[in-house]
Length: 286
Image (cartoon, rainbow, N blue to C red; front, side, top):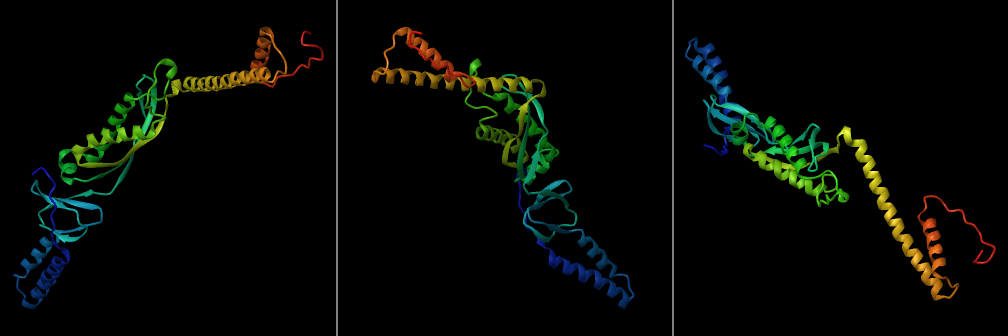
């Protein structure tokens, strides 16, 4: 048998009543009859006692008879089974696993620190009990392996200036990365009969040796992007100013004065500090 088998054992309360009748009845019989045969009833009741099993909600008991798999009890309650059964407890509750922070290389070769948060539960008790040695340790090891593989598939961030224009990155594509991670872990844990309920990145950062350099790079990228927007807006404003002056015939400018005006406006609009105006009280030529 290589698949899970659900069994429904005998009612534990009826067997408890039988146990009490045999045990106390045997004691009373010994006292009243002064013979030894009621001892067998007491011994039988003691053997019956080893067959009682209690299953709490979202728990299970895997039953073995001299090394042979008999079945699994998943329904909660108080039961009685063969006293010679070996009863192994396996929890069916959802469990959290927060992996250690691993130092790995992303797709571009940058060292990063990454960890994952995994929510999982056992769905097939046969596979969890017999197809792997220790299913809880199996979850930890396979999760770490999946995280290492995932980190090598995507870059930490998008660096379009170096020709690495990726659609999915570890930092910005949270949903896509989580789905890929969940699928990767689920494929690895399928052999142990474990269902992955949720998997997501719990911690993500550059490794310490390159963290400062990458921070400066991100700041420089942000400054360049801001400057690009400022220049783009300044050019539009200068173009609008020249068009309005020409349309309304406020002043007639030759090419040299247009160039000077453009230069002054660009300096004013693109400067980091407020410009200090100089008032020309003379003519345009002085």
